[in-house]
Length: 428
Image (cartoon, rainbow, N blue to C red; front, side, top):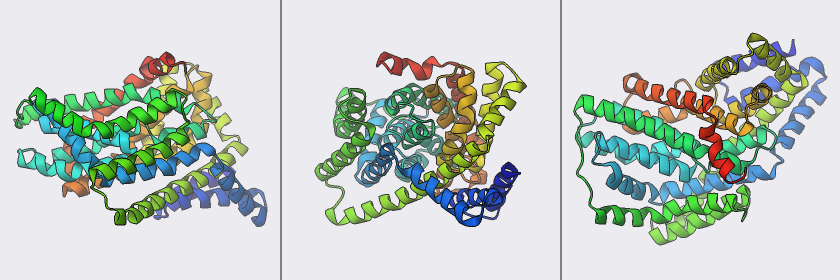
């Protein structure tokens, strides 16, 4: 009875347009009201929200969000695009490759797919149009490539997964994300090259060694942030939370030298970071309350038993889980999806012998696809808005990129070494 109320109330609230954080919180309260009186029900949900947010690791999220906001306005994107252009601008579909590599680098540095889609797409779309690329193709490239930054560390979503999983090492997750993220980017580049050749898009001029070096030197301070943050975490110099604070300090120093952010702009940047943080934390708090209620009702254990009764094949079970997550990603934002479904599916995959770090990468990569699909695909809407086109027109060029992302998901799912090789080298 309680499970039915939880699911149905959540679906109805989403269906009538209630924001997802409120939908999660209200459906949790409705479920508790069936079992206990009103005051204890409200108290329990509030307590679980507060307890869910009482984590030192979660402090990393507002700092990484602030670092991303500073970088989004600090001229970082322009320098990364310039560097990417000298590397791959002469390949078939050169500007599409520039967009993909720039989005991978900026998304990793900023830790936000939406920020990458906005920052890179804002001027790459116009440049691609001038070179003869269609507006819809430019939008498709920008939308799909922007999600790779959620796999390539530092990534807020991987920190959320660490919390939801009960303490999987953040350093291990960060290291595990490199190869899957780069693999996804490479597959997107293959699709872009084939599509560009088929449509006869222009090829850029080959850059000289001096041009490559100059553009690299210009982008080097931005790229160094990744070395400082990840190197510090892996080397044991500081924790992920401390690394996020270091990232903010480094970004402030960087923007001072770039002179692209005035001191009077900082309050607006801080306010934007606070707004984003508040939304994320509300999602985390309500999702943790729903996760507790599901655990209280033994939902994860029942689902584990049900899935394992379907088949004893690891390949089949993982395929079913991926299909469920793909469906969930279409309708639910990534953060609550990770918090709600990690406690449900993690016991299943660990029963099958799957490493929790590996599953974290599979889950996040899977949900990245949902960011590019309607009706709640945040990156899709940003990419379409930046390009000045419509979702209907973008769907056709998007489909080959979706297939590339699905192929990357299957490879990462069934080849654990793609995720676990780097962490094993560093002893995680």
